[in-house]
Length: 136
Ligand code: GTP
Ligand code: MG
Image 1 (cartoon, helix red, strand yellow):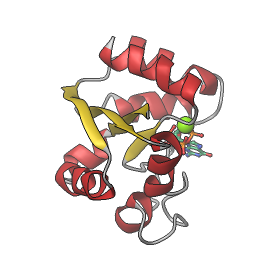
Image 2 (cartoon, protein in one colour):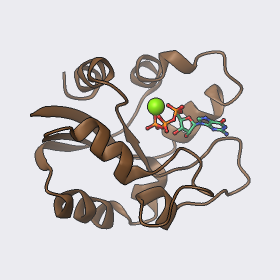
Image 3 (cartoon, helix red, strand yellow):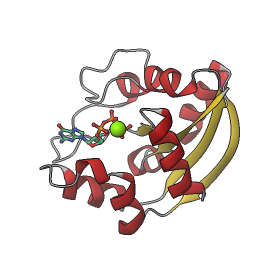
């Protein structure tokens, strides 16, 4: 088994989609190991998004992520890193496949950053690092 870090981003919490997103995760059969409401601050976000520093969407991304509470989830299951990314859909919510979280609930709002509802770690190294940031 393995673990991943999932975030319901501030747009998902603000839109009241936390329950719907959790229902999809549970229906898929992954195990909730830990879950908490977080108020993302700049220090944690800078660590979390270090790979994107300097990109044009970096500052808007941090501002968006600090715009309200998020839900951090420690999620476990066989191949859960790959499996949750599949459940989430591709980054751009306009073209994410219907049936995915981003494809069903997200779209482009004309803002500087893609508001795409969820985050999921993209590798076992990222998962270990990000779980340390949000649950350490
Ligand atoms: P996460 O699970 O949130 O990490 O999404 P991802 O792995 O699908 O995307 P990535 O790590 O490349 O980017 C992190 C976040 O930055 C995305 O989820 C978007 O919110 C935002 N983002 C990434 N690429 C772009 C882009 O090209 N344009 C804009 N406007 N936002 C982007
Ligand atoms: Mg990513």
